[in-house]
Length: 482
Ligand code: GLN
Image 1 (cartoon, helix red, strand yellow):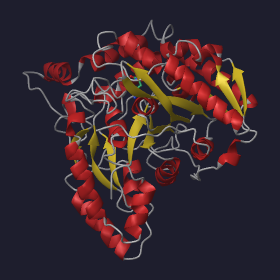
Image 2: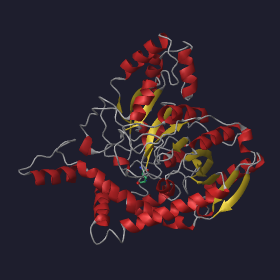
Image 3: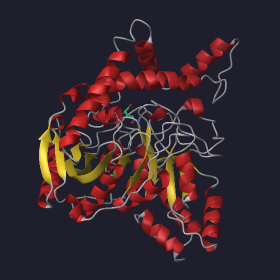
């Protein structure tokens, strides 16, 4: 089968005997090999051939598998037994997963075959995948530019056609923003919709696993497989997934609210893509209005004052005693210090220090506890806006892909890349980035994304909406030139 077929097409071809899981795996491996210069993958799965054979046997035995033989890539912070899970960090260079994340297990149960693990910003901290300790990932639309982050490898795997779908994690935008910068769908489910069991924690109250895909049908397919309650994750919700794509009629009377605060500071191409999408929605009978959420001006500050303290606490477990690479020394304290000094990259160390500071006595009330209050305010403003609108909309990112190195020396500029996405995690809401057009920058066409946000547990509404946008030709899904 050729590249850029959807997961649904591949699974049907396997079920009908037109191709086999082994054949699909070989083709995906060949594409991964050819796409190596993009740096999307950190490792290939040694057990993939075995997985493909097992799926072939199940199909032969008459099982009907929704993802029969579909090759897939997992972000390297998602555990899969027997594979390295490095989180793109030196400290976990030698870490081999002793267990499998629930989301990954559900994919395997549904017939998927894991091709490999995707590059990312170290411990999911970043917006460009440049914080990987191992390699940069290049944007397939312009190799001088970043793919976004932190799930840059997962985004590029799908954008470059290595696999039709992949999983990433989204703490403040890490699925949606790289999806926008690479021109594919990226979906962040309602907090708790997908189990976090087996996802290496960054900021536990914000983290969600989410899919990348090139079609609304594939988003539905994947969500129906990975979502749902998991006894291993006490925060996972009892909400059985019921995803399906909608037709154009879904849009008639749909109340769409543009978030006013997201209208400033965008490039001309981002602005145009948003307006084109709104025009298409109006044309299909949607009612488009504008809504203000003034607390969003505090979203970035609030996000980092919550994400960093949670990270400082979650990452305390990496001291070389149980996990990963240990730096030997004469005494245990020295050994732990050296391990963390050498094992963590600069950005991770910066966040651990700021997070520890914000939690320390005397500062807790001024920073962390204040941020928690603003978090509530933001969630309340969203809830109020959903009294008026069925979905809210913003650009996914104020600008298309930026150049490698452009923001690495200025952490605050890098953090600002998430201005449109972080508030959604603070409020626990579902949001989908839809490829909505292109902006020409220095002679290169760069993808631009538009973000749709739904109320908590409105995940199904967003995937249905994506199908409807496809039906009216409002999704700009193109293939980059190799
Ligand atoms: N860029 C944001 C950060 O660095 C979001 C990352 C994410 O969603 N994992 O924290």
